[in-house]
Image (spheres, rainbow, N blue to C red):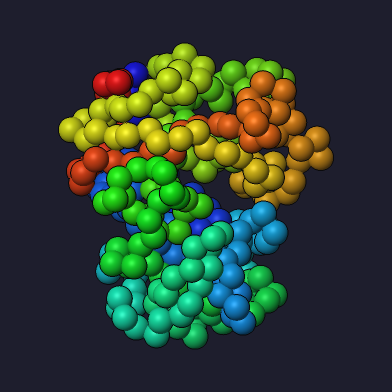
Length: 267
């Protein structure tokens, strides 16, 4: 087995960046989901579930570590990383409330024009990261702005089996993984507790619960008329009302990953 793909999503609900290698720390892949778009008036987070336009955001990092925002019809914008205590704004992501730095008026104007709604962009420094959901992970585990966990792993064999059942190929990016493992049987990852990739070890904490976001085409943002892949997933991957696909993961320490590294199941 080997690591066949490595992704990050600089802005929550924005487009993926495919990486060849990356540092990894307690917040996951370096730079992953450290930025989030929120309502201007109440700080509530926005995602593609309700705002598919977020999928137009092509975000990356420039040579100075600034966030570079690009989208069709808009001039690129470089956004400096705010300081840990700069212009703190109260935000809500699911059941968590926290105070994080606002990224400034230029970023807010750029995103508000794109979405047709008054929004702000916020940043999560590691000092202000969230605890994981109750009952999962260690006290030292944290997450920035993913839904709940620092990393998501999916086996390529699992996607291939899902595509076979649907009768057409499904894009891996519908599921927004960070780590893709090739060479394992379909859904083998369900039984893994700890794995090693290179010199890093990882704990698999819980299955990932999937939502309507998976029915959006990652390239166009259009929703599938037949509600695939959720329709088929519900026929064989539903447990106690939750549709499960992929595994939420935490790293045991800092290190680096590179596509092609061997993956070993420890437990």
